[in-house]
Length: 386
Image (cartoon, rainbow, N blue to C red; front, top):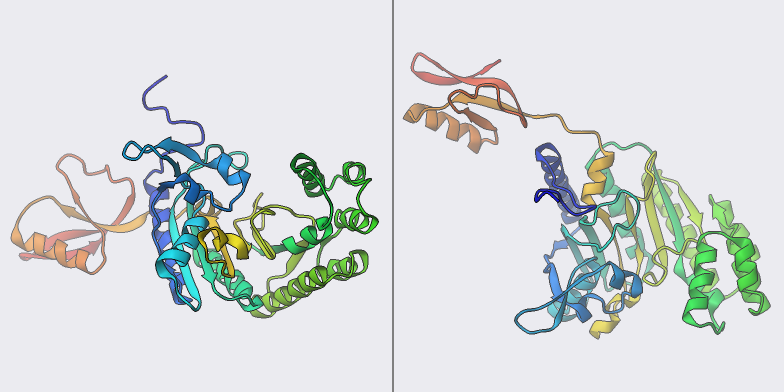
């Protein structure tokens, strides 16, 4: 195998795309700063037990593991940043009130999480700790939409919602071993009514009928009224449906974006504790943003605070945006005369890109569109349109 061939689902990022990714990263961080979120930079490498605390088997399988040559302990390369941010909130900041934190950095996956995905996402996210009310859920959802708008035009956005409390309440009191529970979850997520009917034949009647009803509970706002009629009238179900209604109403009033619902969607089931959402762009095959409420995330660090947030892959987001034009630049000759060097330095201080053309390479500037040139006239250097 050639030495320059990269591993599967790992790729270099070339200049134009790299510039787009970096400019997008800055816009996303500026957007979160406008909401009062503070930037944190967790390490890429941690002790494995810290990285995987409370995250479940799925993240364990996604995490690269290695042995620390200094301590002999097993280390992990992060596959998700949220557990690290929860640790920072619990042990380093330890604030009594609300903490708003954001981050942007690479994560590594042992395998792609869907077809054609990279194993090295550039994960951006924002999280709010310390507030249990629906206001926090609303803020992170509105911030997620603002981040997508800051990224650039991408067509009509749709927000899809569910709530982990509904499925959990239906399984409450049902005694199952782990493999049987996983099969029931898989059948529910696939909306396989016949398989679910077979798997739940010995369930209590209320739980069985509720789970079978969930298979068809997806669509726009009226599905919540249908769910209220079809699902058990428990406190958890009532609260979940009420929160979904309120969040959808606030979303529509603030942004004009309409919500849809899929109450059997189990993505992140082991992770989320309440409302969860995905934001889809017209024509995109998967959600660009995923988020919701995950109140138990800090429990393993000794500080079980309410938490809500979202994350996205900046590299994936760039892939659905229109390619950026080449950056306008100024072409300058290569020499060391003080007057020319002063003119170049002044232009660069004002944010201009000035490309000094090396002798014999007049037409080899690929990443920049030189639409102006620095030319000498009467002993002074001036910018002139090409």
